[in-house]
Length: 477
Image 1 (spheres, rainbow, N blue to C red):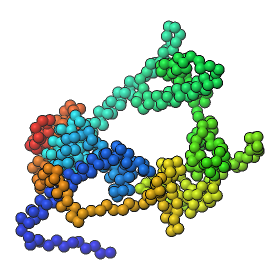
Image 2: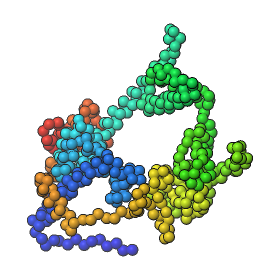
Image 3: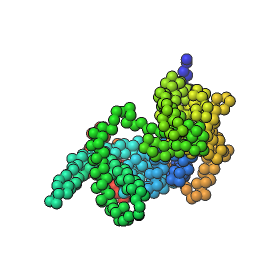
Image 4: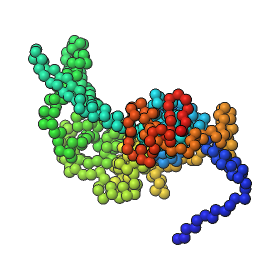
């Protein structure tokens, strides 16, 4: 294969013509950045109002499907859009084309309402490369501060358990945030369990009983919940079982219910909690199956061997064919096998009757009204709950004949004045001393170097550094 380099010929146009082209590029780029600000406003509103929650996992997944963005780029758009909701100065600068999206994207990684003004000065004074270097140094200081705080929290963890004079046991402690969150969740679960037990006893009693006794104060509920946690831990020997059985969910469902959700019959978890028939159908799509036969009195007559709904060899072929969740715009690799026609209704467990769906979209198809069917040509067709088709690739948006002309006219009507100098940085070619700039800018720096690597190739503090202070616009000395 031959690779030919393009031949660059000397342009016959004068330098003024090239300057005009350069100015047009700079001006149109600023217009695009201003339009990007409006796009981010729309994304933020769409995300906040849950417009993406029509079968998609997130706003980024919807953007990837509807707009054609790479999923990583879509996540970044959503992140920046959310951040600009609390950073009005940066949002306004982007909306007027004064900062590029690349600069704003970097600054929103570290900016807060308190530091927004000084970081806006960084964006106006420096190039995109300067901004990236400042942000890296800033994040290094943040990470060090967070590491110091986390280390301090870890050292201060403690749990004191002692007996008071009246024989009561007093518990007092400080837990790390993630451990505390785990304890609070466990206490909440234990309180709920105790509440359900108390409610069942009250219903079984002859009279309504004392209301105050039924609903003790929260502090007493917490104490009872802690006792239940301790009892449960000791009862199970602090070991919930072998790994294979630890996370197993057992569902008991009658065959008629599995074949037709409208039929009467049981559909319950192992502890007796009822689940919907559609939930049972979803779980039965890709699980182990044990067939039990009962007589008219409900006594067990026969029990079959446990079998996999989808055999291993068929599962390998299914993963090789689908390569991830088949729901439009998803593609997640952690999936479950879905029977297009459920096996309880006579649907075969064959490759043509199976499709991979992630947990989120498997639930959408069974419990949220979404439909999927295989067309004669082998393609899958997804439909929304209202019956509208959900295409694999959405139709392209209609564009005017000259989008740039329409964009300029729209900004003029909004009073946004953009020219070739609107987004120009104030940099005049001087070297940047990142360490000194971070010392001046970051509230936690305290004149300490954030990272040894940020000082490589930089001069000592003084000239050739970016002099950035709160208040007046910064200059490059």
